[in-house]
Image 1 (cartoon, rainbow, N blue to C red):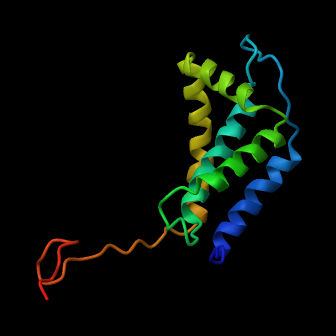
Image 2: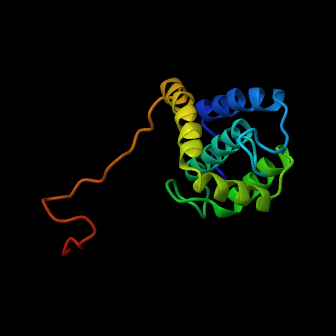
Length: 146
């Protein structure tokens, strides 16, 4: 059974979903030439995919403890993202391959994403991670000898 979604995560999803839903999305030939997704559209898709990847590691259920990706959920997220932008997985992969071959354009997209990511990090509180400590100076995971 899934645990409750933290309020800050719900707010993040709402903050990101509203602008994305209000912006038109399309696939066209880019101004820089070639049949790939335009940089602004590709940038939005990469941001959505990054958030989906991060979210899939935060959601905990009986099969996926915090820190491990829920591949089932990720599959649904990816399909929803592609449907939202009216593209196929193949179109996304072809565009991603094109941008990998054009490092300047890829760097520009990621440089444009950094301020958005930084703003999100400042809005959301940092997660509290509990690190186990050794008991009686013995290494973690070793039996106590009891």
